[in-house]
Image (cartoon, rainbow, N blue to C red):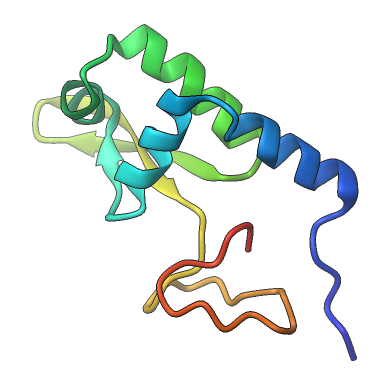
Length: 106
């Protein structure tokens, strides 16, 4: 039994979302672990509204996911990369995947 990968339209959406250098930096930063929007904005060096706009585009493409979590100082949105990596709960859906660190776009 073969597991279907992303459709052509889904791949176009993912690649479109990654076609921006700032969004690539966001994905690369989140690949090392989940982070709060405010901390991520400081680390990347952009405003929170600009970061939020780019995170929305990445989330719509299924590349990142946001959760509302309570931080020590109140509510904050926390985002994480949705790629496959060791210890990640999602399993790769591509039959021939052999990437050890990350599997895009699984």
